[in-house]
Length: 145
Length: 145
Image (tube, rainbow over all chains, first blue to last red; front, side):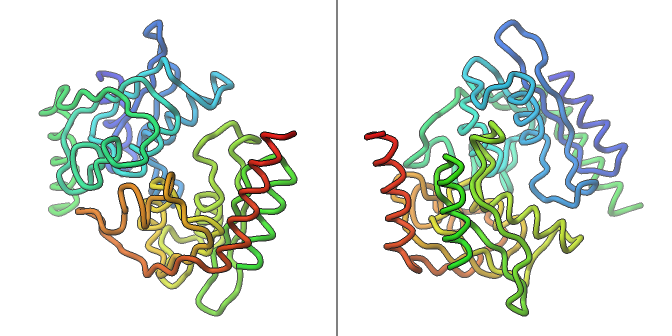
């Protein structure tokens, strides 16, 4: 999660919503890391999780990551939760909960929805305060800046 | 939908699950078209819809497509439905219904889920039989081939 938080801080420095993600392999090695790049790429789907998952699969040369964990600073949105299921990750670990935009513990609750073919283990609230503070500070800065 | 069906047939010819998508601008012009490329790109999220939406936004130089329609041969999965909401498309028109993998009329019903910030108009079942036949023939070919 420390690396994911670093990616989130780096995203903030690029004026992106500060969310960072890391994909960890079975031996604990970092397969891929990414921060949010929706502004830079003008692509609202360029979320940290999707970028990291795609990069991890590319690094591995395999479209499935069944022995990997996705670690992300914010509860994944429905798109990223669906992507995590598609990439078959073993576990999703996230920092802050997202009651408005989240898709794991909130909203459509992707992994619990009928038809979901793969339900990763989920651990939420890891270093939650730091992850949430990053987002809060960023949006406060936008309002007052 | 004819163009989307063509993209689906072209996908089948590449040994990809035959799904095709087109993004139509407000004047009826085709902004982008794509077929499924999950095998080619070894990326389970390289669905026709996501590729077409991303290409349309890039063609426009704008991350939002509020005056555009997404036309796709199969009911979008949760990932693609979430992407359509994020790209703010006006309307989603699809061919075959997908009771197992769909995310619009089935599964997590993304547009109806709490927290969904944009709910496109939805028209399902357009040239449904042709779109479904393409998929059925493709999977039958895999089993018998």
